[in-house]
Structures are given as structure tokens and as C-alpha cells.
Image (cartoon, rainbow, N blue to C red; front, top):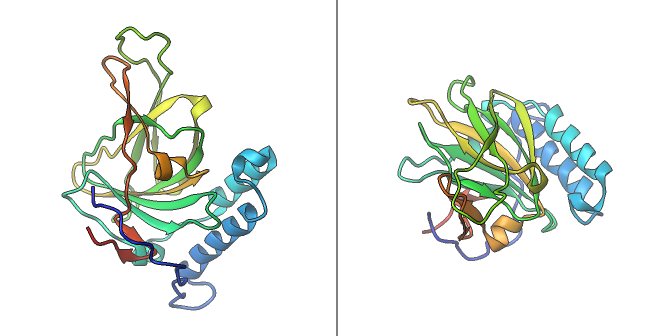
Length: 223
């Protein structure tokens, strides 16, 4: 993965290209609504009502390919590319992730954080991401991990994940096209401390490194 870069300072919002009702303007309003919701709070853990309101914001948003053009960074040489859209008040990260063809992520858990993602295929708007969930290992002895749920998510569908729901991995089953997802992490622990990576065959956990960003606020990071 590319290395982190120096702080770019406070981002300048990307201006809408076609007025108030353009796809870019609607996406900026989603960002502003999330900022407003989390601004006075201590992240999603402060209140269950905050979680429900955030979930409603994410589900109500309808994505359009044109809205992602300023954050459209894809790289077939990378496992996936994490593109920072917004980090608001430091209590969350909004990240656009591009998943290469036939990509399968490791099983992981972002310690003590919550997130949603709205899966969509940027190219043909029909692609899917597959989320496979696993039960937490119940023994320290090497044991294959148990699958609890496997779900395909298509355009504008939304899922919610938290440590209390188990472990998971994300994969792009399409052999020809990239898939794209938008993730809201709160608090942004994985970006600060990394996460745990699990071996599917043994259940053994190792600490994963902090994932750096491929781009920040629509600007490519320097490796």
C-alpha cells in the first residue's frame, strides 16, 4: 500500500459542477449532514439515536456515478485503494474504496468501531460486493473459522457492521469490473491503530498495519 503523506491541511470542499441539484452537490450535502450529526457528539458510541440517524442519512442517499468523479482513483496494482472523502471532526472517516476485479479481502475487525457501506459498481452500476461474516473464535486452539452469513450487496444497498456482530471480509466477485463502496467509520480507530487480521484456517489473529490513503479529498497521495 502507498505510504502516508504529510498533512494537507483543511480540505477545500469540491464545488458542485452543475448547481444545487447536481450529483456532486447532493454528495456534498451528505458529507455536511454527517458533519452536522457527529459534530456535537462523541461519535456513534455516544447515543443509539445518533447511530440510527446516521444510518438513515446513509440509506437515504442515492448515489450517481458522476458524484464520484473527483474521488475516482483506481489502481490494479493495489489490493484496494482507500480514498479519503472526509474526516470531519476527527471522530469519523468517510472513505471511498475501489475493489479490483476478483478481489478478496482478509478477514478483519476494526477495533471498537462501527461502519456502514453503500456498495455500488462505478462502471456499470450493477456490480456487487460480497460480505462474508464469521463468528468470533471461541478457543485459542487452531480451528477453522465458522461462517455465520454471506450476503451480496448491489447498487445503493447498505449494510452495517460492528465488533459485536462478529468478523467479516469483503470481496468483489466480478472478474471484469471494479466495484466501489462508500464507508463511514466511527470512531476511526483502524486509521489510527490498525486492525486485527484473522487466519480463516486457524482463527489466529495478528495485528494489521494502519492502512494509508491512496488519495485525500480528491488529491492523489505521494507514495
